[in-house]
Length: 431
Image (cartoon, rainbow, N blue to C red):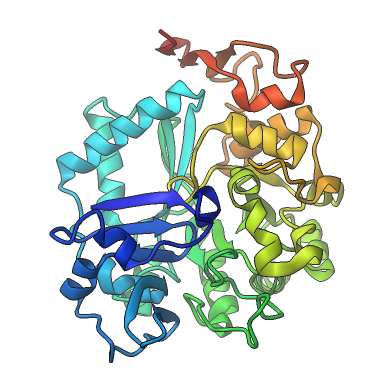
């Protein structure tokens, strides 16, 4: 039994569940609940099947949380997640296609006509092609192959071969299915306390190493992908991860200029002054997920403190510095993919509890809409054909139940999609 897209601040108890909470539901079936981001909670049966017990050591880059008596409590951080995730079988080709079709229907209902899917393995990319051939790919898709920082069971040589031996690079495809950037990942998440930070999280005495790649290799990896013609998108959440990735990108681009790159930092939570300067000078984009403001924001004060919490996802700062900003959802890591919640978060900077998060970083409605549409088309190298309502562009548009530009701010998150049109054809109509 697998679930995902939650955090403890959404629960009445305001705490993480443990294995006994899940055991109350079932001890017959293994249960794995993926918290966003980089933490799982499992029941006793899952731990038993994975062979995790009192004397199991923490893996490199991970942590088995424990009760005071030393027994695992069911919370697995960072690489410790793999103990139980390895028990989950990949879906069959038909199941994968059916899932893509179901996801497409859900996206159309909230007005999403294009997606990009990061960190894909070959079987997942094949599923997209199968869905396209079967007429079951309902939204346009840009695919980002998994590269460094994802699969611990693949060697560096295997990962490099994936990028180098295909004979292609970012931009291959058509308006329905195209190849995007290579996806890398440095660290974990902020409220799971697995991000790479300059200072320890509140209440901790040191910065733990939960990184998914060796930061010393960043420049080498960036240089290799850059030289092969790939764009690179890297998961970088902590302020240290953000800083190191921006500096590494800058060195690589300075050493081998390539004006057409679309390299980007994914999440880009906390920016240093130096990283801002690099991003502006070398046009390194920030790909942010505004729904985290809404669903995760209340926990930031607990984990990083007041100062950093009010520097979270600095969208206005990025734009004012001339840095490209793109908004996406990060589903299924976050709670919902509805762009109306994302637009509301960018404009109001409020959480679901009404807490202001870095209100000085609020955007105008026009800016928020731009980074959800035209900016995304730039990221996927399609800015000449989509992202705007303009003659000669693809006829992808939505009809809303109220005026986004004039309705009260609090209503933005309540906006409903009446109709979604792709290629001039009605793809969804509200009943």
